[in-house]
Length: 345
Image 1 (cartoon, rainbow, N blue to C red):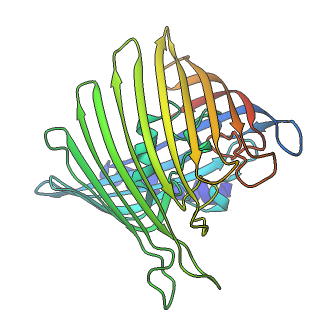
Image 2: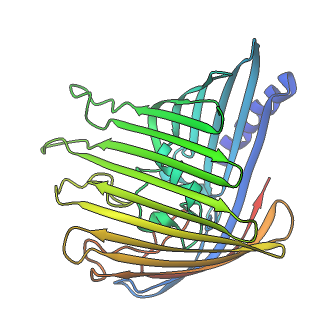
């Protein structure tokens, strides 16, 4: 892997010198995680990417004239604790896309974040996948990223924005199988923000009928300077959580409510959230409380400490038992404590 990364770096560094339009960036994050309350008992481990997934990325643009620009992003995930590739070993598993950007908006092709995930990140103090309090422990985000995606993001007009995403299923003989659709619309005015998102994800049937998971999320936030308050509500049908792409059970319907607080304290901030999942099925309701503190050593480096606990109606090891994870793993129990450091470059 190291030879591959260095080779890619060399190629892009030469391009950057030629046109001065390529940026190399990344995140290095690692922490100690203690998980408990799971069927296998407690475990203490080092995790690479607790607050944010470690990565190295290349972002570029070329001015084509007339306000038009060619853009690309290639972003590789790295497990900092072991040095291996994240996202199941994909070379650029975090993001990989190319497209055009203009005054009329951006049109991109490739592996990209879903509009629903970006909406959840905007209202969750834990940014949907940061430390133990992550909203993704209970709330669906339609898979975080979409493969084979055509995505359009509008320019901001009087505070309004919108985005549409279509992910091709690429299943021979069945154009509906594996297909994904996503959309989001937002409004920002000063300290106030509001966003509505929807995701529709089709299953990939083998011997069963095609099923579709759907999630709709509305959320907003207001920054009072001394405290930022966010609130969100989601309805789910078939999409249960981050670990379940599509549940074929027609009774898989649930509602999620999230309340978040972010309070600046000195050179850092306190983040807290409360999430309630109400499931139509028996013994599937869950509640999560999360709390974290970040202290910024500099503009690019911070240390963090976090704790979260989920109260599950379901028993450990059974369907409907939700676990406390972080930016790179789903976790093994209903309680977790994190302490670590993140550096961005």
